[in-house]
Image 1 (cartoon, rainbow, N blue to C red):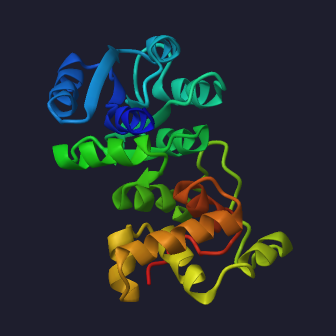
Image 2 (image 1 turned 60 degrees about the vertical axis):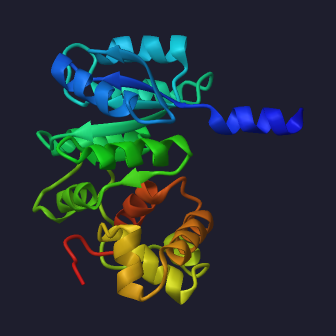
Length: 245
């Protein structure tokens, strides 16, 4: 009986809600995800308000969330979904970068992943898988775009705290001391928008080793995911805005 139960849990499809104000975009995502084994598209919504309602009704594992929509936008919808303790739905934000401040606000709202709308179907499938299993996904291109907000003269992401200068504060230094030298290198590369594969190449290690280092960094910094680690590094002055090694 136990083996049968475990098989049932393992074989359960990832339930996805697609949210976009453009019908053709929703239809495209439905085709991509609906035809992939292990996925089930349980619904669609054209506004943030409808998304919040459907999340409560359908309890999907992942919401593929557009940002700019009429009425309630994807930012507020993400904030409400993440704050709802009665659901465990995670949000993958899909963006075209029309509004950088929207992107950063979505990050702060608690989205678990960010992906470009012009990404390949394979990238979308992989992103939904990553978010569904409880990990965070931040496409390197997205990371770099967000971090440029810190580097811009007068660039102030909506509701974000200003970077604290070149010298980390005492609390940040105490947290940094918990990291090994290798974990500090990983943090620096994360903050530059590097993917696990890019970090592995830079440090001459395997991706599995990188994943272990990233997990340790998150644990020691007491942040929920790599997205929050990036923000933490910039907000505490650990990495200078605009730096590229």
